[in-house]
Structure formats: structure tokens, C-alpha cells
Length: 126
Image (cartoon, rainbow, N blue to C red; front, side):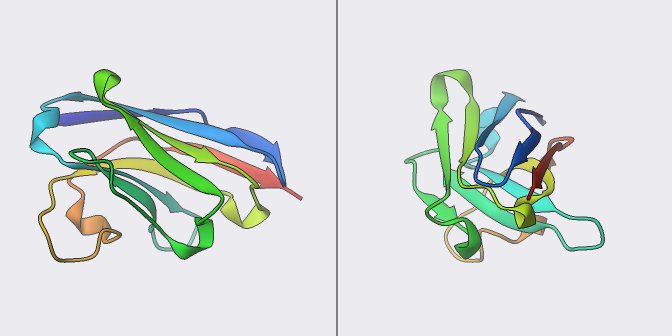
């Protein structure tokens, strides 16, 4: 089992920045992708970014490219999401997720991620 603990959410004005952290513990060798998803009330969970822990390859949803950066600290089993130039539409609950994925399939399919954190709220005001 893998446990994920997010931190770093909060409230910020449009144009501001936040950094989310996700500390992974437990049987972390059983996963090779750590990602961030977000969900607004009444909407489906959306993949934001993910990173291949074995080599650092990253993937992003188009709406955050150039503004968000996912990174990892393998020594700390922690993944980060640096969010810059935040917009009101980025307001969501953000979830950290972990998966073991081989080639093929879509990185942003939530069903492929077996382990989930509790979520951290990000609110961006205009």
C-alpha cells in the first residue's frame, strides 16, 4: 500500500503562485508515476500533470502548460506542483495520485491511479 499526503494549498489572488507537495510513503516501489489531479464541484476529476519517477518524464494538461511545473525529490519520495500565473478557473480540490503504468494508455485517466491522497484546496480569486 502507498500513502500520499498533500500540503501547500490555500487562497491566492489571480496571477499569484502556490506550490503543492505530496509525500509518498509505504510500498513506493510499487508505483512509477506520481501525478496531480483536480476536481471542481459538479465536474469530473481532471488530470493536471504527472511524472515518471524512473526518469523524470512529465506530462501536462494543455490548460496548465507553461504555468505549472511538476517535479520530484526522490530522496524524500516527494512530488511537487509549482503553480504560477494562477487563474480563477484553477480553483479546485487538488489530489495527489500514484500509479504503476506501462506503455500505452492515457496518463490522465484517473482509473489508472490506484492510490490517492485526501486532497488540498486551491482557491484563486479575481
